[in-house]
Image (cartoon, rainbow, N blue to C red; front, top):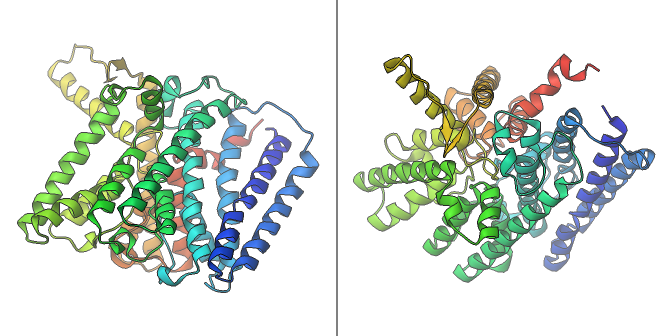
Length: 482
């Protein structure tokens, strides 16, 4: 393990992260909200801490291997999660405890969107901007992680996409060639953000809200500059724009890259994961809209827009709201929440188990049924026209098993702290799926639950964002052996 090289990289990352507080200082100056000092102090503290970590190891060079990759990925998210809490903790205007500050920061960076804050409309503009910005930077980190790094580490079947990443990263070493992939993904991510912000502005948002909501929409984060989320605007055009960009951001960004490079939408139509995902969203949307209209919950027009919006928002694990879906009739709250466990496509900013894994499990289940009918026949599981190796299928099954086991363990912890079953179940589901809003006592915010539950959910958010194995492998003795 190259600890000095890892420390050097983490120091640089922390110094770079400290500079991302500058936009919040600028916003504070523009709106004269009196928050320059807290953000300035946090920036100086984080930059100095990064400098202290980097300076002793500044001249150390080494080629990072897979085990270094696991450690640096986990430390990166944990370190930034804690560092991102500084502007909240040092800000007297919002008076947040250390636990709440870390919870809000990790929720933002992992694009979970669970919040402990209330009266968001009354918060200083710079604080509201910072929350949105956290999700945007976290979303970019997730894209690079999902498309450039995890395929090399072979986490939970993610190596399936190793040959399809938009760059030459196909070996088992973390080399500077990752920068080529990251650069391509950055251009796509930035372009989508700008287009989304412009669309929001022309649909009726002011500049501040348009930029802030474009950050959390493309990152599939769900933070909003208003307590009522997208429902604050009561604007069907804004809701339709949001639906489009939430869906686009939940698609594998490698597909966006190839579609852009070949100037063709056929790339999407040839992708088995995308087609399965589209059909799933369509089916759930039709069921939701039909129930909302049949039960007279909404008029036809509002039922279509609100139903489609909430399905896409929850299924993509964004977490925006235009209605209180927790109180929708019949099976709808449970149905939408269960769909969030599937999440979006691999290589996107969405959370959940990922459509690719669920599709492979479905195909393997269908194969086992055919084997019962034809015991001597040989059937191959294919994704599109490509056969999938048994090794990848084993990795997918292993991922889902550990994912669900982790969910059960964390739910038991929350129940032991005194939370009721619905709250505990939905809170853990919202955390590990990086969804945000839950049911019961966490339907609107997480500020009222106890500290042990909050730290457990912080772990759950990181666990879900890092695809489970990336984090849990650090707790195994074998990982630390030479």
